[in-house]
Length: 243
Ligand code: C5P
Image (cartoon, rainbow, N blue to C red; front, side):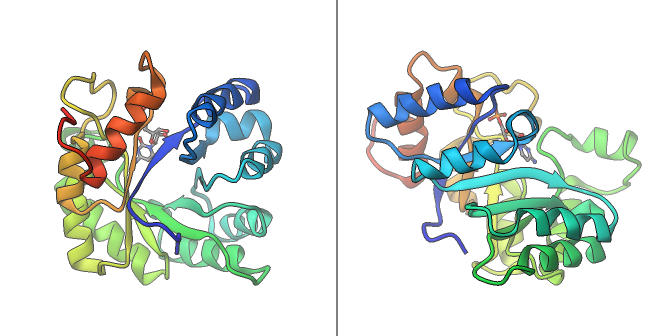
């Protein structure tokens, strides 16, 4: 389990290592050491070197690669990642119970203390209408996310990625130590963009999120470090003039 639950995770959603490192330099210059997320865009472009260089800066890393394949391939993918200096990695819960179990086994195959494996429930870009009409799942988003969280727990995963509004339900069903990571967090003054189930950092805290993921509201801000602090303070309940 990560050493410091309840934190803001900052995605490095950039196409190149040099852009990602320039972004990290902004934080470094202000003495901030954010928990970062490396997603598919940067990982596919730069491979393992981006993970190693980010870790060399002493930063915690969530490798957000959302593995979803047959169990054997998922296990192999995770085995290839085992031993990397990462704190959290994920797979899709929609890959099923067996796939998640095998993914966990792959991650544990090198012994030591493996990173926390979390399952993606329903992407925060998916609305209930999309869930029903496009994916053909005739249920509410809440029920679907909760069912997938229970499945992830049954597979031995340590938590899930879900919308902020689902974090409380997930904790009720799966326990307080089952980590909830919630993207789709914005202050009301930010554009919701493509996130359908967004919430403010204050509400995310009330709902019981352990980690919030805040991308564009920080990276596109005129002063990203200031925006990061504003989100972090609101999420952690520090200070008063946060709005
Ligand atoms: O810019 P924004 O704050 O919307 O970025 C959200 C980040 O969280 C992106 O890096 C995206 O890949 C990720 N994410 C998400 N929804 C999920 C899982 C991950 O938005 N369910």
